[in-house]
Structure formats: structure tokens, C-alpha cells
Amino acid sequence: MRNRPNWRISAQDVPRKRSPVWSPPSDEQDCRQRAAMACGGYVCTKNALGALNILYVLVSLLLIGVAAWGKWFGLVSSIRVMAGVIGVGIFLFLVAFVGLCGALKHHQVLLFFYMIILFTVFVLQFSVSCACLALNKDQQNHLLEVGWNKSEATQQDVEKTLDCCGFSNVNYNGSCAATCFKDTPPSCKTCSSTIQHYAGEVLRFVGGLGLFFSFTEILGVWLAHRYRNLKDPRSNPGAFL
Image (cartoon, rainbow, N blue to C red; front, side, top):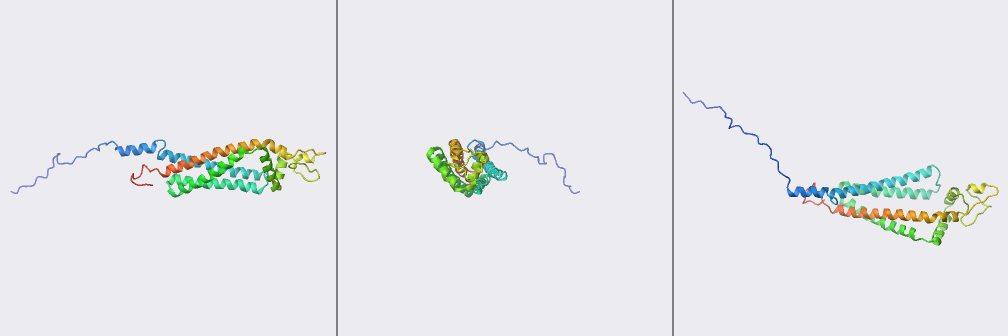
């Protein structure tokens, strides 16, 4: 008789599944994770730059909204003033949008142009803010008179808001938008005395606010420069993004 093959399979012949063995993360992965989460690292710099540009977006929308609100309610009738405020708001919104896109995508070109534009704005704004804080009474009066003579719409807005007539003298034979001019007899103050009363405080406020935002702009330049030179720890450590 032929010998039949033995088809029996023993338990030792069945391959056993090995349980996965946990291996601690390597030193390189640990360093990359720490660099990503540490303050001053990739993630922290990215979040700080994004938060700063979100602040700029909110400020730009506030400028546009205030200008539209003033025009809608007739508080300001000068088209040049409205266009200037809205133009500044749109420009700030575009700069903040470029900064946000560069921060989210780690885009080298966008971050470079963002740095250049923001540094230029910083130089201009810092110079104007220092000039506002350094003006004396005579210089303020001269600038106010020059601005007064340039626009009749601005004159009417100031006369209506401050209830005054004329800049340095009141011409009762002319026209005036102030309510005091309609009294009998009319008794109105000159607008120069009223404006100069608030001009110093307004210039100090504008200069201080401009200095504050100028330092945030130089902070944005520094963050963008630092962020451009950082590597993404989640990507290939040998690749420069």
C-alpha cells in the first residue's frame, strides 16, 4: 500500500501574529515637535502673524464702516475726506490679506512683498506721528488755515458741527451754516478759536495712536522676516519651504 501524505497541521506550524511593539519617538521627531510648539517656533510665529493681520482687517473694516456711516448720516459732506478714509481702509485690508495668505501658506514671495509694504507704511506713519506730536501753536494755526481755505464743503461741516462762522473773522454779510448765525442779532465765534482749543488734544491723540500702530507694523515686519526663515517641522527637515 502506498503511504498517504500526512495532511495534519500542528499548532506549531500556524504562523502567529505578532503584537505591535511600541517604539518611543526618535530624538529628531521630538525636537521637531518641541520646535513647533515652543514660543518663538514655527507655530507660535505663524499664529502671531495671523492674529496681527486679523487685527489689521478689523481696523480696516472699522475705517470703511465709520466713513460710510458719516456719509450716510450727513456728518461729513466732503467727498475728499470720505474717499481718503475709505482708501486707507481698503489699502490696509489688502495689506492684511496679503499677510494672511503668506502666513497660512508660508509663501515666500507674499511674505517678502508684505515686509516691504509694511516697512514703507511704518516709515511714513512714524514720520507723520512724530510731526503731529512736535507741532507748536503757530504751526497748527497755519496748517488749519491752509486746510480751511482749500475746501468749502469742509468749512460748512466745521461751521455746522462747532457752531462757529469764519476762520479768523465773522462776515455777517455772507453766509454761514452755523445755527448761531440765524439768531437775531447773530453772535458767533470764529472757528479758529474753537478749533485751536481741540487741535492740540486731537494732534496728540492722533500722534500717539499712529505711534502705537507704527510699532505694531515693525512687529509685523519682524514676524514676517522670522517666519520666512523658519522650516515647517511637519515636513521634510531637509527641505526649505
